[in-house]
Image (tube, rainbow, N blue to C red; front, top):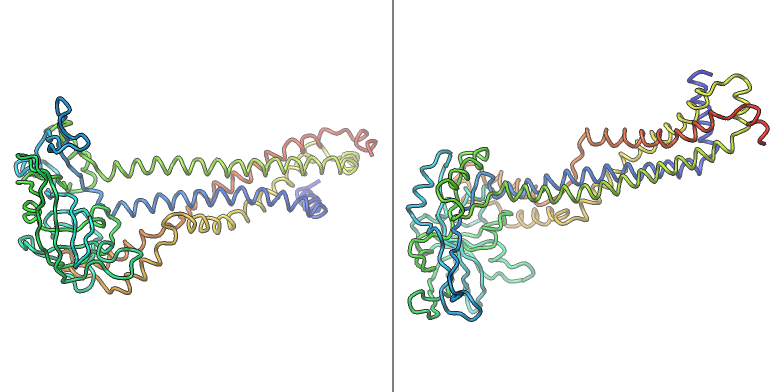
Length: 454
């Protein structure tokens, strides 16, 4: 019996048992499509986070001071009016200068940060304030854009303020909280370190610009004022809350971190985007492994279906097997006949499973957080007009930033050719393996016993 005859008999057996074969093929299809969808969703998830964290600039290190524990528990308790614990290392101009002199450090951006209340008209709300040189915002947030009509204030402007879009136009509210060109009053409440009394410091600012959403929480959740006004308002006396250290390249982030650790040891806090991204990747990797295990279980169920289908087929075709052996068919021929039937089921199920998996991947992505957020963001950005200010400081960055922001808002599955080929071969391989035992069982029948059984 030649290969053509074996193929013909196998196809005929599948056609004779249409419903059973279709259900078995469906099992393989579901398992392979799930595996394709999970792989594409996982790759898309990683790509989504890579785009999101690209907004934070991968070459940035966030340097902060570590708090010094106080003896006797005299401060920091509930209801206490004592000032907070002092820092082990005071971040000041000297520390700024020393870090700036390290190799592979491009620039150091000092900042003050705190919680303030903003009074706009008769309404007052609490927000975070970021005090730094406004012209360096593009260093820590490369995709930053300003709404139309905004201007980027100069570092020496003592009354200018930039407001995040979600602060100016609170989500879910029909009227804006802050308008461009409006005068607002910032109030900072603190405890006087000398007297222990609660005090307030207030200062008026004019809204020079509104920052479009960037995906960078440091910028998107705060109002931005200059360094000197922030020092005065927050009563810092030249003691920075944090330093944004920009390495010359993301490849040198670890080197710069090691150099800073050599200078200050564990008395200074250092956080990098790469470390955050690594943690996120480990987390998403665990989720993807879990989802993949579910898909593989589905494939195993499909394999069990193949075993059941072929074993039943063997029982039903004992007379046929006996006849074939009586006319000279060898054990290898009978084995190949049933294995080829399993192979056909695997090929059909896996091939259609790849197509179904593409659609299922998009379905998973659309149901996930961020899966449908791109269109709303694009419509809103289109309605507000093109950003300005970014092009003045970094030519071409406005258009590129807009495109990157819109793309990073949407989670889309990523289909890798290698993954799809691997899934196809796994599905087909499992199908052939599942068909081996029934095929072997069929090949071991003696012609006399097979013909006598029916």
